[in-house]
Length: 385
Image 1 (cartoon, one colour):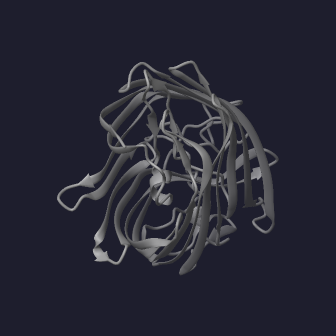
Image 2 (tube, rainbow, N blue to C red; image 1 turned 120 degrees about the horizontal axis):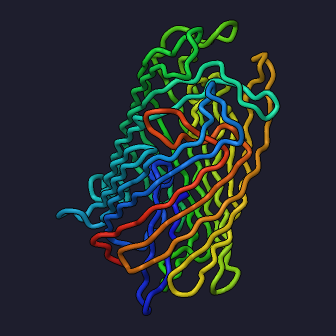
Image 3 (cartoon, rainbow, N blue to C red; image 1 turned 90 degrees about the horizontal axis):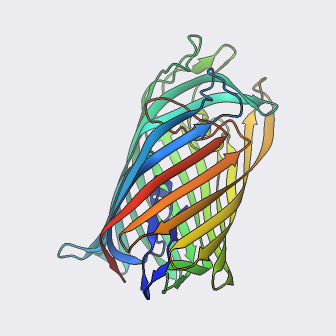
């Protein structure tokens, strides 16, 4: 989720700003403690599988991980806002300007790329994930949006997009599985976002309030013939619909503790077989995941955040005729240690009893119920508001 972890040092805030591809693609006007920032994070990420299974990519491994994020809200002579992100989960570049159209309308240009996608076309037998066909792919998108505040804190944006999707086999793709053909897609998207966040100026962190974003889209495509295996081969419909939502909610417990609630979910066309099998989130045409977190500040330089996690997924069962609903539970902890305003250590551990978790590598689909990360965060040219 789009969140901040930080702590005051000698009355000067030294937050570490965490960012992801999904945050940038879905959140529209999140609160930001900086007017400009270049943040680089690098470390090692690993996974531990409760039981190894080479047919679905469950294994123990350690891999390199990292990301870079740039933000400037007064870029160039027009004082526009630019954002850029590069990480294992995707690439993003965005430009916002409030003067192109005028009349308090924000014009937004975005380029998005996910070169390292893993699709897990399968079903659950009990809590075990069984493949029809696991394969790899990539997608690239351009988006043009126009938005404005309908009232204080309520922002509405809509605009067209164009996407290109490509697919390729992997070691996890059985010979009997026919891959979908590459295709193009276009459509229209609307975002509605309500923001009531109040920031802790001392720490540069959300202290109270919420941000909720709801997004809907209609997409048309030129997809090819049926894909799949055996009796479960289907074509994509010419048009599909999708809806997604995300929530950040902060409730202060004390001066040193804040409750955080993060939630993300989606409801998609049942025949949207490509999107419904993306392995970076819970599978299914209806899915959701959320965390209940308690952010604790330990002294002047350490934050510790234990959390519990809940996931929901609705997928077709192995007969491809009945919807199968599953709930998964998990827990974890995240911590930051701030050595200065510009340098921090970052670590986390997460366990969820779901065999479908994000891959820790970009060249191979490797995942497990337990995931962990240890890294360093470097902030360059950070300017506080």
